[in-house]
Amino acid sequence: MASLRDIKGRIDSTKKTRKITSAMQMVSASKMAKAEQNTKAFEPYSQKIQEVMANIANSSTDATHPMLEMREVKKSGYLVITADKGLVGAYNSNVLKSLYKTIQDRHKSKDEYTIIAIGRMGYEFCKKMDLPVAKSVIGIADQPDFADIKALASETVQLYADEEIDELYMFYNHYVSAISQKVTTTQLLPITNLGEQASSSSEYEYEPNAQQILDILLPQYAESLIYGALLDGKASEHAASMTAMKSATDNAGELIDDLTLTYNRVRQAAITQEITEISGGVAALE
Image (cartoon, rainbow, N blue to C red):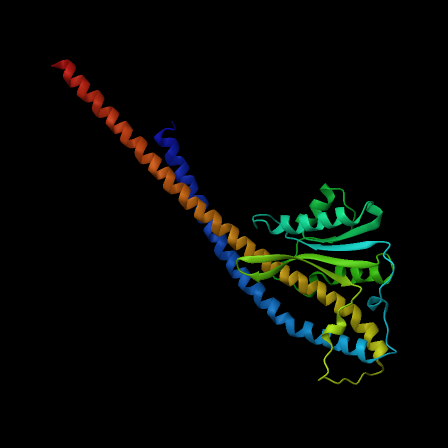
């Protein structure tokens, strides 16, 4: 059985760990609130640009764009959004499992797909599993600006425009609530759901013409979808971190209670043993 000193040392160490995890929980909660606010603030822009794109695509028979047209898939692209660190529960592993399963189910050769990784954990996973990574970015801020991924988003969309890939899917965690995040897979390119977003109540006049507006705005729309997924993923990341740190704090508290109970039992046994030895010594003297 461990000595009283050893048990006391474990109790003190666990208390220090609980203070750290409790502080990390509060920090993550603050970051989550800000990330959730950023996600909601981005929604009006996302909805409006989608509405404009839908109206052009559905009302103008002359306006066309390769990003709206299905073509034979010779090579697929997968954009995966993960965190740059751990301590976020199953946040990273869930989305990476979904990515890896999709690749295993759909492809037999590494020549058939490529990966764009946002986040260190996704990048390192792909390197470890020997998956082809075309582009990557790590070290994204907790509250990212579009400038942080503008180059990557633009280059990713350009891969499709240059026909280096023929479809693009995104894998990320969708923020549902502070305690729930859902792994989401969505097709980014080609864009096939604009018909669902058309608004009959809005009328637009395009200058110089609808085609030129479509050529300029459609790539920006695709880039905005990537940024929107990143904001969503960051809110999920902070929520997962908060939940993981709360669980760690609660577990530390339970461990402290168990260790304290063990400490008291060992201490009581030692006191009883000392009393017994004293009583035996007194009896021997008599």
